[in-house]
Image (cartoon, rainbow, N blue to C red; front, side, top):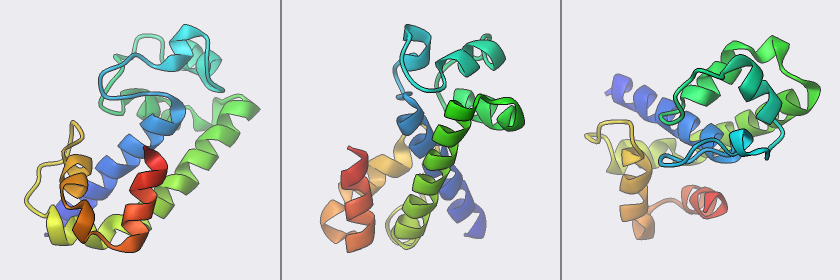
Length: 130
């Protein structure tokens, strides 16, 4: 059970970070199109990384000490938002999505399917993400 919760938290982390950095599950990173505070860093450190599944976010995390000041500040902001989402939704993930396999947005979809039953904090966090 603890493994599932940790996996769910990791999934929420990747999705949250990806969303704020400018990634979606089905799109290329916005940075590759000349937008976003981490565009140059993505091109420099993650050029060969296939977008999707949080791979760009993990790549940036690996190069955290080498990031530009603007990108590092953005990543720090994303991390803070992730912590808020994790804290707000961890109980809801455990209650409603315990058997859901992490990845490809399944945890987020599960939470959204239980929107009316979610804690107020988790619901508010999900609404902010949309």
